Length: 153
Image (tube, rainbow, N blue to C red; front, side, top):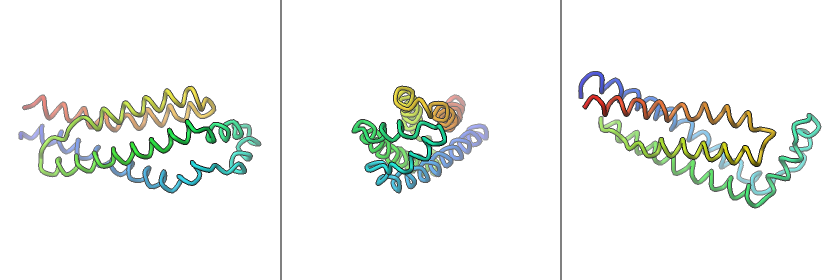
């Protein structure tokens, strides 16, 4: 590999590591939150309602089987993505290129989450949109650096 490819590979490694760390933190937080996902505490949402943030509507939504299933599937997908990021990290350490699949999958899942949030959680849609945009930047940076390495071959 030439110097430009090594620099691009370093970028892949850096942004993959950022995704790995954020994914691990998010997964731990999600696993801790499973009891609240399965059995939401109404009192937590009453305060949001008093603040005018649609807390009771959110509480009702979180009690639907669709939302509970969606949340659990999201946690499972997060775990799978974390495994992909770990495998990519070990591949990058060997100065080989990882697959671009997990990064496209991350973007796709974020877009699906955004669509679901649009239809189910309109009160928090703007926040979801901002988080989705920020979180999609990371895999885009990895894919951009991957394409730089591949184009210089």
